[in-house]
Length: 588
Image (cartoon, rainbow, N blue to C red; front, side):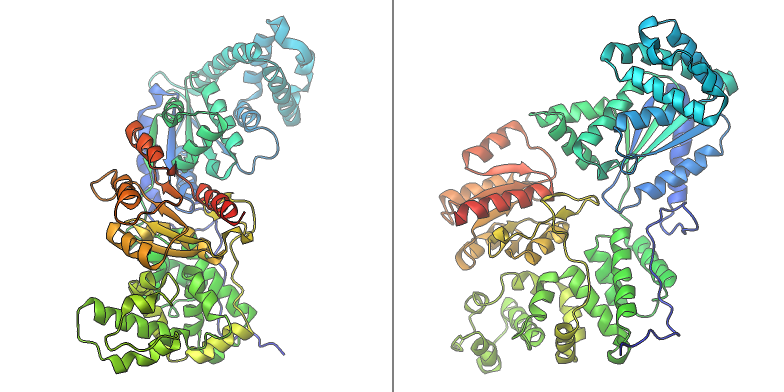
């Protein structure tokens, strides 16, 4: 019989409602930013139209800021707002949806003016004849808007002429309740744009372009600018990355970048979420630090970790018997170190935690140049089928260990996590094998940018056992993609510089190399290193992909091609797709 949850424990799931929607507490002080942006929009009302982009990665609070900004602006006289969710707007085109959303904000008298103006243009009237009769009801107004859209969608000439009609309608609407010193303003909020596919993103951009010479309108977009840039380049067919940038510069006049929460804010955020979920006291300072660091201060990812704990406890309350601190450790391990967790749950790895901690201790001794007692470490070498050397050879041992062990051994949070599990490792290993923790695995879909900005990986066998060397001086930026690759069978080794890469070429023998472009003040360090790998230190002739944050200059791009490398690419989905192509070709 399954155990029942302890009634004294009231753990609850955290929802994903934005700040300002319902009773969500403002843990990140979004309100003050909203007031500042509101003041900017109000001060600039006479220069409208313009577009303000709120830029941030998935889960970093874009919707929360937009909700607070809308609430702040709505309290101002002469101000009207429209909310358009590009992701949930339905199957109709985004261009149609956004235009209708704005038209429906006008009252019946303004719509009548539109009809009269259009009636004077015989070729635009068409199906609109006689529709004045339906203006008496709300549903009639919606129907007229539908008919106006049908006229607009006929051809470019009709759309351009109706654009002039709409400009007149905006003028009438603004004059209706405005004053000489404070004209009326319509602010259109477009949320979740970066969750949409490339074609829909471009449709929204085109809709905004249609309005950008209409006075009195301001667009506020919530989007990840990098996703927007990639979508425009892909869907609009720009071969030159600079052309995509120029296209967006014509649409977005000002960008506010949401900074990641500071350490103090992130601690406040975690404490607030723990209190709200009823889990305060279960996560110690080390656990909080690990969540904050590995989630990269992302509020949505932090919530997902806490929710995983709440879910697992409710599914299996017998964790009370073992200790909830151990459940916390298991959840952290599976969320942030899925590759090691998979090894731990695999039969035959009963002593994996102790073995890793022994390796980590030996590695620290060797790295510090301290004297090594060979007898002390003989058992570790024997467990890997190696003859214990008189002087422990770290390179020989590491050749028999998983490729990511050197990176994990340098990860203080990971080492602390395993030390917290070491005393009860046998119980936990048995538990994981008999009752696996039910954490969601990476989604099994085609490689692409997911709805939430995380890479989607399909799990096909093409990636299995592919040996990837990843060179990046900021490996913490690659946590999500690195973990997903390892879950899908990639043998991954991460290094931060040329010296580490050269050692890896000798020890690891990679099938492919994934590299950044700039490191520190050297914007072309990746190209320089590849030249060295090709013609000097490593004699490496295999596939190379540059994965970076933005387009390089023409000379750099030319040099990348001369060295026989691919890229650069800018999304995790592109990295996965490239790795699969290389792996498939390698096995053919």
